[in-house]
Each structure stands twice: as structure tokens, then as C-alpha cells.
Image (tube, rainbow, N blue to C red; front, side, top):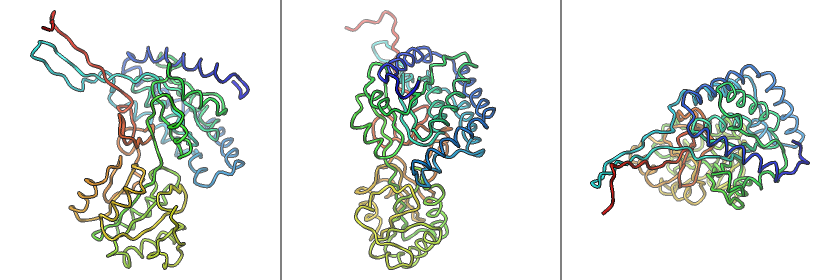
Length: 421
């Protein structure tokens, strides 16, 4: 297909094929799905050179498009990242199959025996931006949960995603599963996204993974239900009882390890009692690491900082920038996060158990952490093998969306000629 093709016809065809594949996948054996994912991992390894060559085309496209360094980092593949994709596929393959799991069962006085059993959602549409590894992660997780998937990657990762998708299809064929179980929209045309959002007859849920612009568009325009993966406006609060070395290690890692991922810290909050000591050290360490610190009036006196403006609070930089603010106490930190956070991931650094308990109790972000880098906000680090995104909504799936979160359930009710009086 090319970008001049009939997009409505293209998308309708993909929808029909995915729905037919989903009907078969719903009762596919756990062994077949595991075999498909392991065969896909083998294919990624075998085609590594092809993947890297395709990725170089994408990197050239991204540079020509003017992507910033953080976004180019999200786009780039190398031998290490391909090895991580392979490991992710194998980890998902090795996990228990969620389909058919009995979540609960009970007997009623009427004589009925009732089971609540996990079942696939059906067809999932995944719309994502530059990270090509999402192609493998999303395809693997949807397959594990017995769902067909239609993948629509970003224009930047078009070539890389194409080869990774081909590896997934290699795996499906090797295991005797329908090749249409994992489909890819073969065009950069944005009209395909608009069409996906209205395919209520063939797509059961949409998962957007990307920046605020993409997610906002999907939430505004979708007629298909959406698992929202909103901004990662991630806060790290340094309590007065924080261990200085732990704080230095965690803050630097949370900000600088990879700035372009949704778990990267975007705002540093410091308890007033340690602002002139540990707070000063933290800001100095960030500046020394090349981070642009957008500091409030208390911290902006420190060398290397720049004054913060109102729009720095609640901003997702995805770059070597961080906002920094002094708060009076833990309740001030909680109030700031409630006002400016996105419900994604927030962390407290403290040795005070009561302070940590208060932070955990009074905030309702999808992920809350203590004395750990927010860069661990990742399905792979949670033992899920991979993730399709971090859901920040409160319905159905929340936090890292793995295979289990991509299932629904049904009730199986048995009687013995039982009638209702």
C-alpha cells in the first residue's frame, strides 16, 4: 500500500481481517502462542542487520524532521536495544497465559455454580509515536492475551516497525496461528488514525502511546473505548528525612538516565528544612550533569539555574530539563502534585515510614514509589515482560498495561435443570 491508496477501504480491510483472526485466537492454545512469541524472538535475532538498516533510514528521517536529541534517542535501535526486544518477547512468552484463568468461583443457594473467567478483549488498536520497540511489545502482549491487534506506528519509525512487524508475523506462521493476528497499518497517512478511531464494528479498544498531542487527539475524537496513556508529569519529592546519598543517586537517575521516556522525572520538590543543604546539593548535581534546572524563587539563586515560570509546573519536558520547587512540608508536596501531576508516577525520598505512608495514602497516581528511581515505571521492570503503555485512567486497566490488563472476563454459569421460582 502507498500513501495515495483509499484509506477507508484499507482500514476496513484491516478491521475485517483482525476481527476474523481474533475469533480464532480466542481459543488458541497457550502452547501455540508461546511458540509464536519465541519464534518471533528468533526472527528478530536473525534479522538484526535488516532491522538496524531500516532504523538508520528512520534516524535519517527523524534528523531531517528536526527531532530533538531525546526523541532521536527514543527512535534509535542498536544491538543492546534489539537484545532487549528479544528478551521482552521471550519473557512474555514464558508468562502464564491469562486466557481462561478462573478469577473467582462460587455456589449459590439456588444450585447455580458460577465462574468468572478471563477472556480476550477482541481487537485492539495501538497508535504510537517514535519508539519502534512498541511494535514488538504491543504485538506480543496482545497475542499473549488472545487479542488481534492493528498497529499504527509513528511516521518516524516507519521502516523499523515494518521489519519488526514482519518478525512477529514470521512467529505467527511458524506456530500455525493466523498471520492476521498482528496487523500493521502500512502507510504514514494520518487519515488512517482518524479512521481507526471510529471503527466501532471491528476494534474493541484503542491504546494511544505518545505525547500529549496524540493522546489528546485520540481522547477527543475516538468513538472506540480508549485506554489513556497520558503525559508523564513525574514528580520526585525529597522529604526532610531523605537519605542524602540515596537522594542524589535517585534524582540523577530519574532525570538523566533516559530523558525521553514517560517515567523520567520532570519536577523536583524539596522540603524547606533541607532546601539549603540537600536541596542545594541536588540542584548542583543536576546542573553539573547538564540539566537545565527551572528553579522557583528560593532555588533560583543557585548557580546554573534559570528562573521557573508558571508553565514549568505541570510540564513534560522529555529533555534535559527539570522544574524545581521548595515546599513547606509533605502536605505541600502532595498539594502540588495533585494540582500539577498527570496521575502517572510520583516518588518520595524518605527514611520516615509515616511520611511514606502518608504520601502513598493521599496521592492516587497510577504508580507511587519510595526511594526508587521513577525510571522503573515500566512494565518490563514490573515483571510483565513488556508493556503496551502506562494507563493513567481509573477504569479497567491502570499503571503498566501487560497481558493480564488486556483481558476482560465472562461468567460461566452451570446448573442441573435449575429453574428460578
